[in-house]
Length: 463
Ligand code: ARG
Image (tube, rainbow, N blue to C red; front, top):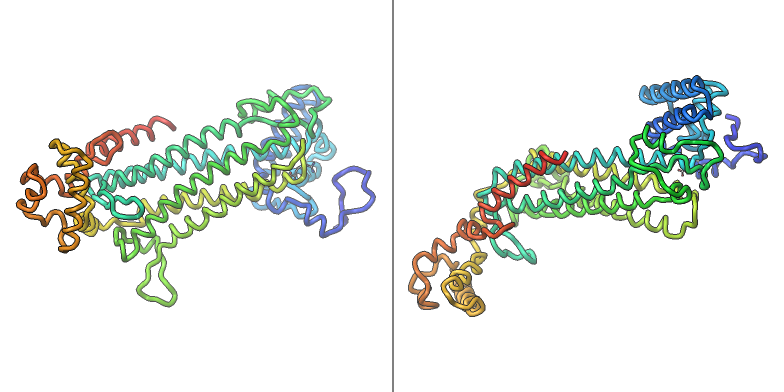
């Protein structure tokens, strides 16, 4: 088609086709179209409200914009490279629909404040969706925790068996991480939800616009106080990417646990067929693809954060075309986080089963009750460090004899220290070892039940 120049008569020849392709963002910023239309509707209404255009002109603009929305939703609005970006594409179609009135839409506005507005409207919406996904996943973790308060699982430090814990306690640790993610996104939302619209290209506008009016129509909590900051700030996007990265850190850690737990070596969970795949060559394999993909996709979100930081660091005020490159990384991060949250929610809701018999075996087959022997003596007046050393000795001799602590006879215990009584056996049973850690925030069953209640009330109170 003949090149229809969207900018001024100043230009004498059309863009080189390769440069047009290179310059165009329509291939990805079409993602913003609904937000672009919503922002433009508010802008048109403001233009009439302030008398810059007439009521009837504004009505035609709004009707035209809504028609484009309809066309887009029905799959009938597919602008090509020649439109350059979503903003030009909409304006061009609007002018086709409404004639000359359409050419008034861009009065007192620049694509610079427009794209900033669109991006904020988009991100605000996405943040709300991600926050509800976090809530959903947290709900799934609580349900699972409720079923497993008294299921014991080895607790690790340095990936060495340390002390057994309630499986619910382990799962609730992730509930807490996700709770912080939820809160953090709420804080980021506040800084996303500020309107740059009306900043113009960079310096404001000669028209008597009302920025607070558009901000109110678009449900922004406030307006940027400085037009140059308004068009060039992307802090809000970086903050979002930081929060998204932390969500991915948490999902990735949990993924790593599931991958370990589902291995033959651990054998703590079985993956259901609905959430695992086989190997094309080894018929016995069942692979933990979901957590592996989540762990893998974490890297790209970190990369997008780094990319955005570097994108911004050298930019002089105000708008620079570099900023067009903020979008793909933002969109990809949003899609990645949403996809990973959805997959993990399904995995934990219905895709895995804890092998409770194997877990019960696991917590009984090691020396993770050694601290409890030391605590036993310390509670009976032996200084803790002395008790610790005694127990170290008995662990060593038991290991050499191929025995566990529960296999020692009362005589052997008494030989080690006269303070030992028959109740030592109960004190070092895995159940008691867990139950006894009833300090606030600990794994004792009472604490865990309270933690579940507290988690439930957070979910119901804070929507
Ligand atoms: N497509 C552009 C972007 O995403 C819109 C703003 C263009 N502004 C400009 N002065 N060229 O950033």
